[in-house]
Length: 141
Image (cartoon, rainbow, N blue to C red):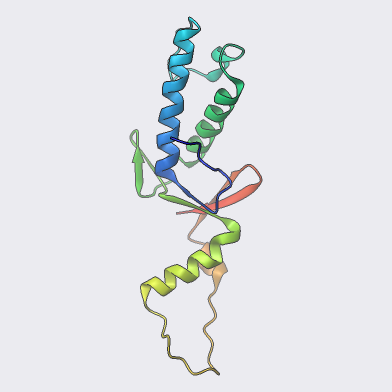
C-alpha cells in the first residue's frame, strides 16, 4: 500500500486505518529486527533512534489523527470505534455540498434565468466538525 496523502482534497478513512495497520506491522517487524520487544499499544518513544525516523513520524501522525477522530461518530468502524468515512478539505466544502445537493435531486434544474438558488454553506457547515491536519482544516460528520 502507498502512503496516504494527508493534503488531498478528500481523505478516505478506510485508507487511513489500512495504512495505520500497515505501519504497525512494519514497526513490529523493524523492532524485532532491532532486538526490541515492542507492543503497538506502547508509545513510539521506545523505538526512537532504532527505527526509521520517517516511519515513526508517519506512525505518530496517523496515531494523532486517529485519536483526534476516535469516537466522533461516522460510518467507518475500526477497532471498536467509529470514524467518519471521509474527510473533506475545507477549500473543497462548497463544491462537495453542491455535488451532494445535485445528487439528492431536490433542486429543480429548469428554473427561469431570473431565479437563482443560493445555498447557505455556513448553515450546512454547522453539521460538520473540524480536524486540523498539517496546514489544512478538514471537515467531517
